[in-house]
Structure formats: C-alpha cells, structure tokens
Length: 120
Image (cartoon, rainbow, N blue to C red; front, side, top):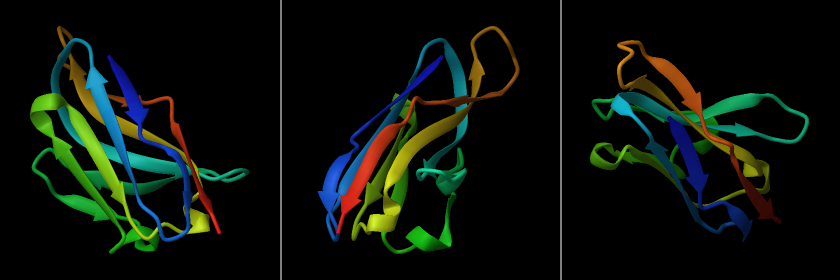
C-alpha cells in the first residue's frame, strides 16, 4: 500500500492550492483519511480529516479556508486551500486508515509529504 501526495508548491499569500493524495496497492477498504502539516522545527499537526461516511473535522486555524473531500472510488483525498497565509507553510502529509488485502486488520499509512510555501 502506498500513499502519494501531489499539488504542493509556492504561492503568494491570499492564493490557493489543491493537494491530492492517492492510495494504491492491494486495498480492501479505506476508512478515515486526513491531512497533517509540519512546519519547520514544529511537530506534525492535524489540519483536516474526513471519515468513510464523509464527516469532516478541521483545525480551527483553517476553518472557512480549507476544504477536505474524497473520491472513495479512486481512494483519493483532496485538500482545497484558499486564502493561504504564510503560517500555512509546511510539509503536508496525508494519511489513511486502510485494510490491506488478505490481512483483515486496519493500519494507518502515511504519504511522503508535499511542500507548501506561502510567501508574504
């Protein structure tokens, strides 16, 4: 099982970016998926998550600016980021709670991260 993020880059404050994360491999099911952010010198913090039924949760710092969504048929989660601020800068990681084929157990997998830099 592999998660691969894309869509990061450099953007000016006030701009937008859309991140994507695709889970691939021998997958039986994917339940919750989420996005985390790690700024330089800081811990990795939850930004947003979405359950298998579509319920969402956001960190207070991104409410009203970021939107998480998913395409379950494609095992893909998205993060639409609008009105970006310099403090949104960091490496964005996606994760997914996944049951791999032939195991019957759920594991949390992580992507390799994608850099988002917001200039002032």
